[in-house]
Length: 415
Image (cartoon, rainbow, N blue to C red; front, side, top):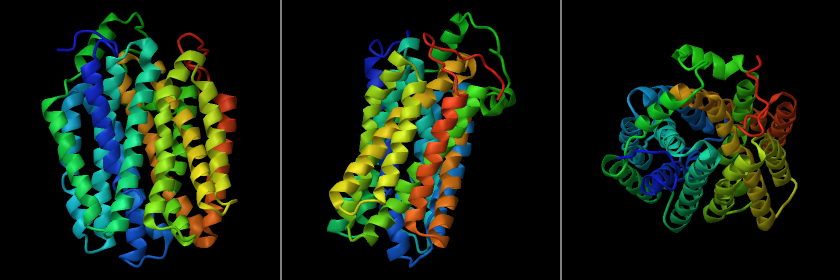
């Protein structure tokens, strides 16, 4: 039974939650560099916009489920929501193994969107519940680090399996195994942390805005609070990079002559750099949230821009890593901004709202990147994504207030 907050005080549960989010990341990574190549080589799709349709479906569904998973986790508890996320994932490997058309692949990605939106939200909120206020950045950083390390390893392993055997069904045996393990963890090893959040809310001296309704939280986290609005916009744009890595990196690199194993390395290095969130989340606890967020946007944009300015495997690996380091700087700290501002009574819902707007960036980014490639070129899509990151970084400098409890200037000013 969990009785008090603290990462070390709840070490075994926190470790179980880290293993869980690692499995969630593996689930996403297991199809990350395989599915776009399947679209081109197995189904004969030439339009990047059409290939990107699977990310559009994923992004929309994941975004909406993020919102409602946060609400459900505040109402029903974190563990039931996590179990639901794994149940939804069970059909995905079979759909991808035997899909007779690209439409079925898109259906599989709808289910993946549900799984990622529900399971990752529940696990992330649980870690925040377990941590003390001064450990919040570390908790989020560890969550994102282990999750995206799972994405990286999943992308690398399936690339190796596909190069050794074929694009399907062999890579998706790994996916099935991961989903089964995730389900067993949720059923037999995970404890619910909602009681901790309720105890924190009862002990909190902050009574202002404690009892907001669901739609009041949606308005507050979407546009009424200037800093939360800036975070939502930044989160939306940051996923343009993730979408570019998912759709365009494999196609761009295959066109340059790399095989699927080499593509898996380049894609995996980007996601693997996210493990630095173990440090960058803690960095936000020490120096404030805003500096690493702003620096991360400019560094990620520079790495993406550099990808189309070089022509060697080693350089692509290096620049993919640089863009990943930039993402690692800002990704956990944007989440922590929201958890700083939100009252414990509606923290999960508030994080769900942020993640709604953030993950709609998958859908919008997939459409924009597809259009840029189809009417321009692959290089134009890379340049456009980098430009969006630079503009967003400048906007954050102008509009985002610091929310760290010690360095904070956040006033809740209207957007």
